[in-house]
Length: 298
Image (cartoon, rainbow, N blue to C red; front, top):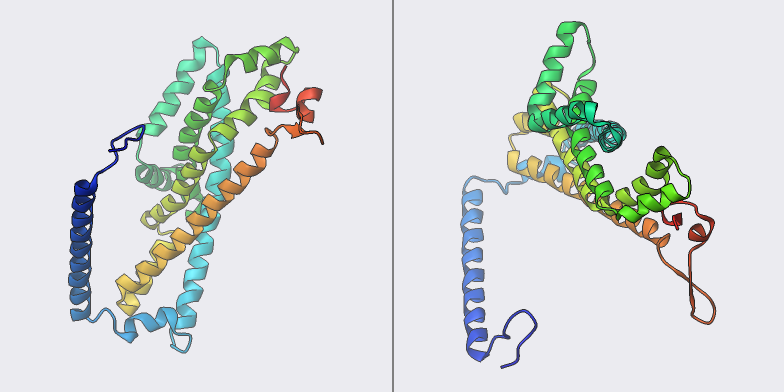
């Protein structure tokens, strides 16, 4: 029996056993799906009246339903975009502050980060929306939602960026200092670009979380996608169909964010590739030779 690096390759008997249990599991899944279908059909969830307001342009409610969903999706994206921008800026500032802070006040930065990380985001949003008006800060629900999301996600992003900075070889910092760069220049030109590149998957994942967390705006009556979907359900009485559409919308938006992350990562990685001459010999990139950018530390 042949073997691979990690495990023994299955023999004929093991293959038959795997095939048997795979078929058995497939039959079980089909049986569950059939039972679900029977229950939904018994409750008349496949009736045209429940689906046509969402998919039939000739339905009298179709235009109004999608107009409301379009406005709600716009409100969701606006809140997410603002929260993302503020979280990235504040999170980066917090990360740099924590890395460069002197011991006598680093505890204050660390304490603030740990405090905000420990508070659930839903409580953060509710607290902001209820406490700030008591002190005369009267804002639209959009800004209460953005402030709550920013407070929570900025400290998470700060830890992601700090982890990216700490993951870099010490030689990067030492080489930059040997060139006469200041601490600020070392962070801005050498460490931060590499940290963002290294932690890009984690950062994109957190940005997707920000987008999904905008659905918590319902607790402060913000007209985002999930809240408007609930209003549509109350009128049309089709929760399965409406929330299925909302789920597909979120999946598509998050998939687009994921593809954007792949595109950005590829663009950033181009600067790390070595160039080749016509005879195939590898040469250093131009930014290394000139001492510019993150890779220019020699």
